[in-house]
Image (spheres, rainbow, N blue to C red):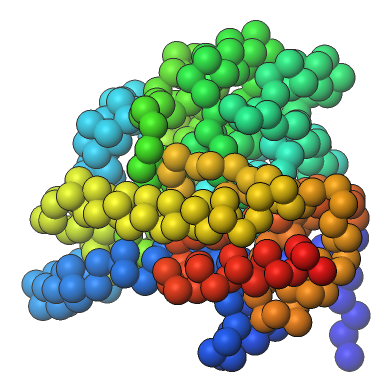
Length: 393
């Protein structure tokens, strides 16, 4: 048998700790709050069916042949118009690059900007699969604490005086996993810090269009006057995650190199999927579609918050998000964490434990993430009741 030399940084690398591969999802009595999926009722199935049939009938060669590494030109233009109208970003001097999901955007950026052993900053906690990407590249993520209104800017500046990170990765709007949103005042302060320390910010914004309460806050990219922000967007949460379609917006020279890297990685993102997204943007009422999604997620979030208020006062504190898919819970000090998770398993309910969102997965935490987008209304009601039962044990 040939001898394979696997780099040390990849030894023991596993699928995401949030994978449901080993969960008893086929059990009709099992309830999972782990997923980051959109609601089934939010998927625009009829529109996607119609568009797909039209593409294969009218654009078979265009959609099924090879394409440019940076993306379908028509989709890039439609996306630029949409971003300018919605967020006042993607100006004419910004580059755009279509990626195979936001995850590829994180991966490509990490591979280009960093070398093994480099430091990157992230929020504490942060998106679990971003941490996996950093580990894959042998990077050293240093977590910066979060407050109720987002990243602790004072702690960030203290950390910048000790380290020279290759970038700061963060999810400022409806953060995964906490559901928190970086306030406008902190966004302005962060951009000031970024300019003073020449800090590159990797802004991951998959949930920004899904605000269902409160006032809109501009993305960091909209406040970027010096080219400090590389903006990551995604169609996963606003159309469907199975499309595997995302994008990067930022310095065109940087995106040109990333496009070359992408070409050597997968040549280009699926042409068929890009044409589907293009027609969805220009031929359908995309604004109306987003409004429908916001109504769905507001209803489900309110349902979960009401159930938590009713069943878990005094045993659980939790965030109250204004958008997105998630809220963040912390068990009261008197609750035995190990027994709590043991009892959850017995009651056939699963949550995402807080430790998987930390660079140090061995750190003891009393937190967990709940997803309100994917479960049904009945599952939300019953699942929260089961969590309350587990907390009483």
